[in-house]
Length: 298
Image (tube, rainbow, N blue to C red; front, side, top):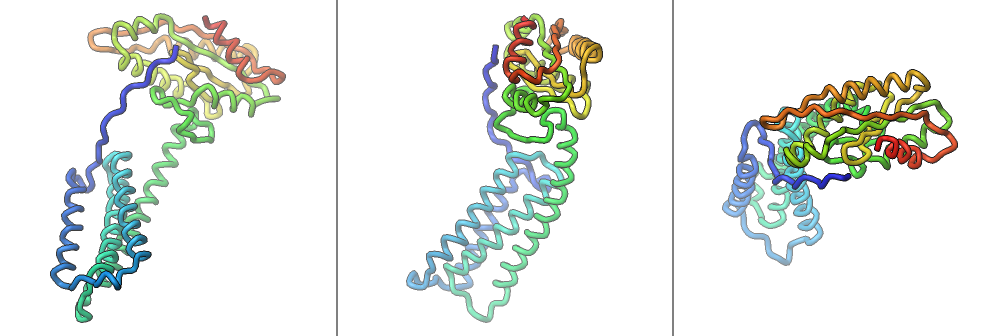
């Protein structure tokens, strides 16, 4: 049984430098720059406007604002987020100064115009570069943690939103990649999972599955892979494992998952777990092999 997906939550924007209203402050800075140009200069005649410059500089400023919003909506607060957000914000302000140059004529005696534009863009690029360096270090750590979930390929389209595991289509692809090499397939499923869904609700059932996925990842080797097959079932690929070793590992994984104790309000759930395993068949396609395991699991 495939569970319905949980509803999407509203956007939450991470604070920058611990300032929650960072977007409002940035809007005030933009308004202040526009006011500065309007008071210090004269409106440029429309005949002198360059549509290409207006579109390119205005489009860049708008794109940077969108990127900044996406960044704050998708990352937690922290020094890396601060560096990336400040870099994008400074670059956007520099681009806005460049846009204002296209709309107002400033006296030649004013020296701060070019300095403000170049300085903001330069500082923005420096901050953005530093943030990207920190982001790279983060990604290396995350990739190490996600190795048992992704096995070298990151494709959000194949990721289950509840467990953060890849789906059965990705597992089938990985099984095909193992063709001709010894490996064991294991499928695990809870007994009585419907009772959790019925008595504790969808959110708790999803949380139980997410915890089960984390537990399985902790019990796998670096080259192993676990995916969600559907409902309360998980399918695992164990390369270079055959015979008695495969049977023993399947029993170990079943015991580990059966020991999972999930607290939902005043109720504590500890469900029995079913497990089946089979050696990978080189002459057979991946999906029939998984389907046969699912039927054996019941």
